[in-house]
Image (cartoon, rainbow, N blue to C red; front, side, top):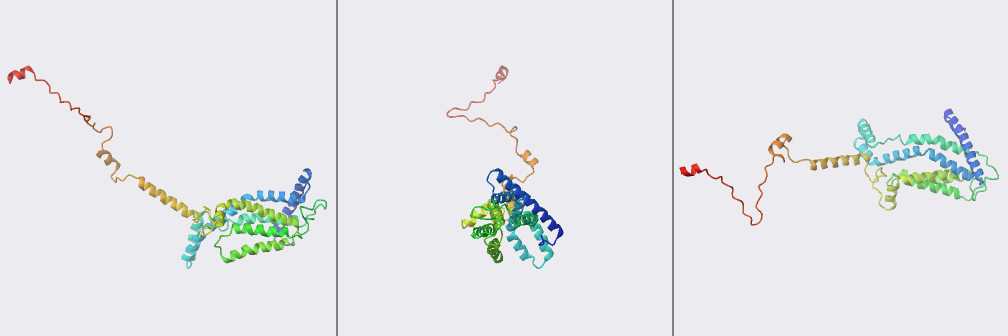
Length: 311
């Protein structure tokens, strides 16, 4: 634990490393109870448990990262427009973050919380004492020594490249694309000297993350693989529009629909009521004769006898 100069962090990682050793022994006892003792399977089970417990934080980190990627074009426009006005630049960037529910620090917090667990499992497996009778796994003679066949280092480098490729936009800056290639090479090189048990842990972590990122980035991956990659960056809504832009378009569309549905008459409601008679007060239409039927003559009342004699 000499690598950690901060006393609190050193104590926390040391405590978690001891907890991880106990958990690994527990997982190994489970394989013994199933009459198939294997430290390799115990490491895989422990890794899946740890990643599942940290899943909510990982998902929050991915969502935050996608939100930041979605507003990259808008951020560049604002930075270009207000490059000589730092105060206005901060105000506009703050509005953009608020409208899209993004924050440059929100993606770092979940990662910082996960780091002690990742470092502790590293130390737990680095100096773990395996039972010599069951320390072999698959083609590996011992999980305490590096893999001499180079299969595990290649798998660790390949899985690291895939999960990095998933989250890297097609039109990313050159330095980001360089990191996309350098990171897997560095991980593969370190895996040549790490114990096989630790490399298995890393590969299982990558495979778990690969599944969750594939689900989260499925729409964007289909576009990139099919040759129809978005012009900008990976977005929250599957297209190339930030969240605030999509919301603004929906509001405009609703206003247009309301204007179309609205009555064309500009007069007040009360005057309209007086001008147009209601259905109840409307006069009855005179029934027109049908066919050859002649209209009936109006009956003239008969004159009285007295009036006739006078004439």
